Image (cartoon, rainbow, N blue to C red):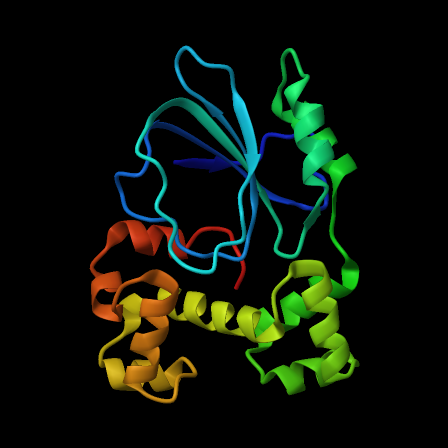
Length: 223
């Protein structure tokens, strides 16, 4: 999979444009990353299909197919998508390029400033949810309502996702699992193992041995 930015003017909601060709679903599941993607898939002999991916809460196994070309427009965490109108606008295009798609994304996606700041604080500071609310200058209930309304997920969801992805990125530095767990904000090794199983469907040791998982952990995403 290749990653690049090719749009002449990136909309504020777009984090990355990625490309893929060949087989899908052979390297294991897609891991939760806190982002949604607008994806166009081209299969030989068929019209291009468009869809907006879900916000995954657990590993997602894709269908095993061979694609001629797949392009993903990765949206920043917390982006709101007018999915119905976006897909409708895309489906009537006779031809398209990435600049055209970027313009449509600018028209049909939105990133609330308060949501962006809240997610940034939760991801970067690794504070308790109450402390994050205080750092943002809002009450805990306001933070909870804001994220529930705009992301359909709780502050706890985002904090736990940020912690597990941060831990996954650092996994090659682990010299002992017990100390590594404590260093990354878990109560003990068993707690860390449960969270790896929950989010990634695998143990920390198995994750560390899987090059595909480690590449996903380093991708542009939340946390």
